[in-house]
Structure formats: C-alpha cells, structure tokens
Length: 221
Image 1 (cartoon, rainbow, N blue to C red):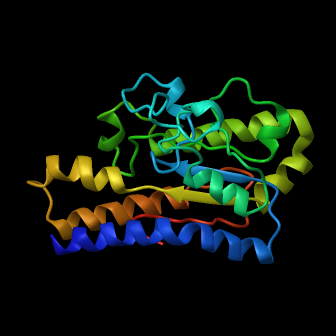
Image 2: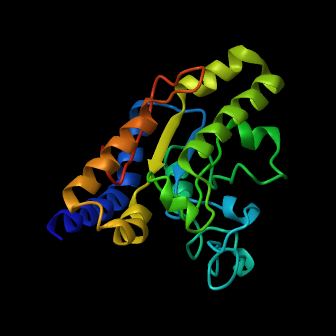
C-alpha cells in the first residue's frame, strides 16, 4: 500500500498548496478567466444537472452560504475552484458550465466543467454516471464556440490563450475504481495507468490552443 499512501499524501499536499500557488501566479500574470476540470473537489454544481446520486445540493452542504443555500458544491460554502478564481482576482464564485442561467459576463470570466465522481480512468465516472474527463473537454470546446459566436474570434483567442486552467483529478480512481480492479493491476501498474491517462488528457488541446495551462493534478504534475 506504500505507493497509494504516497499518492494520497500528494493529493492532500496539492489541495493545501493550490491557493498559494494561484496567488503566486497572479502576482506575475493577470488572467481574464479561469477554467476548471475535475471531480467533487472542484465541482461547483454541474452534477445538479446530471442524473447521478453524486450531488451536493442538499444540507448540510452550503450551510455557511447566505441563507444556508446548498449550491451543488461539496463543501459548507465556497469550494477549491472558487478560492482559486478569487485569489487570481477573476471573481468570487466560479459557476458550473451546465447552469442554464449563466449570462455572457459569467461565461467570459470562466466556468467549471468538473463533475463529482469523475476520474481519469474511464471506468470511474460510470459508477455514478458522472461526466467523464473527455466529455468535460468537449464541453470546453462547446464553450469556445459559444463565446466565439458572441464576441468574435479575436476576443475568444485572447481569453483562451491567457486564462488559467486547473485540473483536480484522481482521488475517485484510487478510492472507488482501483479496489474493484486490483486483481488486474499491481499498485505500481495502476499508478502508471493513471499517469498515462493524465498525460493523454493534457495532450488534447482544443483550438485555439492555450498558451498557459496551470494543472494542479492529483496524479502527476
């Protein structure tokens, strides 16, 4: 179990340092928008619009929001994605992309594509009908088309190329999927699989291609 213990330690360390890293990044770069991909650690409410049991839109979630409102975030108030957007000076809350009420300004300053229950391993999101990573990427491609239709290709290029991109992923693979397939993998081989899948995801680039990709990964940095 040594390998998995190290991976869990890395997950915790990345959660602790992510806001600090974002603050350091913001001192050097002003970003117009933030885009987040991942699982429940950063889902700001996309699963409210997905047929899944992995939801955070009921008490005690959100108890420290105004009125104790549960928004779909898996926290008592703001989530990791919100704090990163705040530290980067973009906005206080990062909305879920699937929220049908989003206006153009919200879209232009970034959204969250994350889905609780998702993972790098394609088998992971199937367990809870979460949004797979590649589907999250397709949602981002759809997003690009939406803003391109609204503000034109030049502004779209500016936003996409200068924004911050955050990825939190891997915990569900380790806690939910690996125990059900451990007869097929050693800890080392499953870790290698996670790294390979993470790298495959990072190689996929929608057009226009971002110049800056800030990845806070739970498997490989």
